[in-house]
Length: 532
Image (cartoon, rainbow, N blue to C red; front, side, top):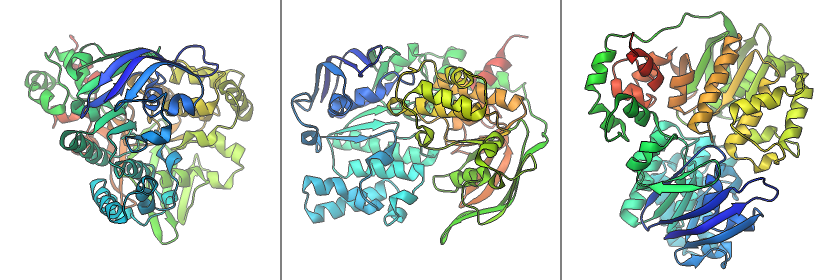
């Protein structure tokens, strides 16, 4: 169905190719998972399949990409519209209508399908993607996860033979991600749809893959079945790293496989108790804070504290008010009641420049904070705005991301690279409180480890950190405490181990394997099993 024949591609002005000699084939009805470090060319590979690269990106493409018998270099992108569907990293960039129902119908309208066919497919997709209650909602009012599901649904209604999915679960809560992946798996198994998916959260998807395509940092590809690829891949989910630690052969790809072999390791862990933390002095005090948008109550009166040096994760389903909470704390978001105090002051009452040194926020769409022509200019501007020493922001960027071209335009960066740049910009001001909205979206495991390390250093210096996220593995690694929201109110608040271990939805892979023990990460298990 898809064939890459010695495909290489270099962006205009780039110092090295984004893809280098990619030569592989993907058969019809196969779910192929594309993995690799942040910035390794995964998005570029997907976009060569429908011709967006190089037609809309510029650059030089050599070799051939053949899809369903069509050479993409010889047909217009529009001629592939009924064959190939693409869901981009930022789904909102592809929206062209005003409401959910209109967006689901738009592609079918362009393909000239009969009205009765369109109506039937819209209803089926609303049910399949769990969007029925949102059918009349304006797209501008959706949460990031809701927008992601609409974008996937808008592609599904056209019934393409090939689906290209760029981080399709990155903004979804665990339950929604499972529903979306189950729907995609049904399409693959029952209808023979070919799926090419780029994803960093392998713990969610690797067990569903028929094939893995690994891209290294130089854009070179290797491919094979999931079991053999996980034997050697540095990019792997926690369950695989645990299998390597325990010496299990073959390596498990799912929690179920690991639990079947876990008895001996679980017995050794029974003698150990994971460490706990003492409660710190408060850095943030929220009292009866509420947020509403017209008749919609996004956040009911909420009260809690966040300690200096404490890392708190805010979790919950898509649309429960996590982002609204962060923006209300930061001071520029809507508040309909209550009070916020950060180190005794309310950011909403301060000049923006002073408030930035008190509270830094990395938004769900980090590109909203990028304005300059190059990465280097963004770093220089950040140092000046933050009154930081020259080079401060750049050094932070280098800690978060392995490599980034300083001459690149910020718009040309991957979503993970944009996030890393904006995080560095916010940290350069040395805020007392750091707020992060889905900070791991687009980051590979290595980048997430570096991010967790940076957050740990920020907390060690006395700053509070609050993270709104669906990434349960990152929460297990980085957070001291978890707050769970549901329908705009707090339903759980406590140490990470206590909250997530008891939850079938928010528990990380290690916790599911060793439940009811309070083990969260492979690193914790490795330390406990080290010889005395």
